Length: 548
Image 1: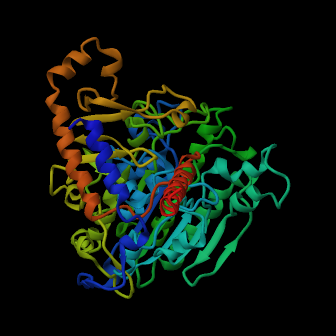
Image 2: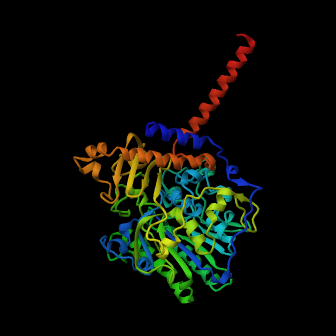
Image 3: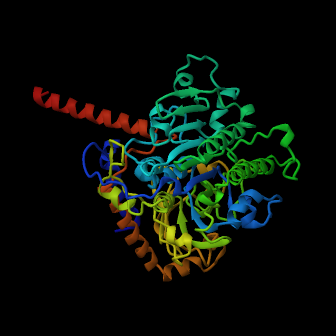
């Protein structure tokens, strides 16, 4: 069977299964107790810091200041911990965040498309989060900054395992749309009533939700001060408590559009470069968080992760990140997925290590659970598990791998040997196994907003790249010998097909919880077409009964 045929049939099969969130959620079933845990005070605190759209080249630990500025506070995490060269996020904001918090690929959760105000898609009740799993281990949990996993109350972090949340719900350019000149002025306009962005939200697990006001372009200058400050206050309150904390800090830097307060312009040493000044601010915020851990004397018992949601967005250059990899956010190429990442745990992870094995944002769920004593979470969830103190039974397929021994240096090789690249429509467009990458569908736009507008082209014969011999995926552009080489090694496409088919078959038993959203009218047209077909069928039946 040709690659395009099997890919289409497998995705249709997966998509055609039960898409309701109830496919994952059960009210009865296996209630495996959480593993025995030691004293809660001995468990490590966990601080996960996400930047936004940050590229590897923007972190000086990776490129030694080649972009003209340095990030000493972020670099410190790498110096005192482990840094990754082959770390995979996802290709856009919502996908990268959902993969981290659920440990599932975007196709399983349906959270592949960038979340927009008023969208019906969001984090489903049947998809367990790392926060919910950590609650069963005695953790207090809080999320600050950008969420981007749905804007209805039912999708807020406080409905999914977090004790409290303070932050915004969308990408920044969506937040400032009401300030654009063509935004409808009538507050009763149907679009304004249904699709206006909510403000910066403060919420707690008891159901209280407060809108603290719009995230205007002016407020964007200092919103990270607000959310980072709230995170620091939370750490100050809980850092010495009996229960360990899990804090997920999501800054808005460096998503477009960058708005710099006047007194910070030029702080990067690059006058006129707002992006560089924004990165200076971002690095300062990371430094504030690390200093709080130091000042409280809890740094040695706190796991600190720094990473980002996806690769750089570059159509707004010079207000844009930088990556050495091919293309950018929302494509199938490495530039969309390969991002900076590092982790520090003093006394547990060797300092100053650079890991070249494959690691993914999906891996943090099982890895962090293993770090706090729960080593079989993945197996329990495959069978169905009800967290202690909870009522819902979760049966899901975690796509992450436990990397704890790899990070500790006990294993030389990563637990991960494959990675599956989904685009924002939920289509499997590429896969990596070992050093090899197969591209099934490619984004051919070389850059600018066409990357978001133009469709992916699905290939009758996949392209193959060796990401050690050609880490920047340039061979098909620069080499006169590429197609000859591909023809001689076409068996690699069959290997990719076999591996991808095996992976996609897991969606038969563990189907998606919802269908991905759309930026256009295609899904509306599909519903209309189905309704028309049903109407015509009923009309034909009626005619048959009357004999007309």
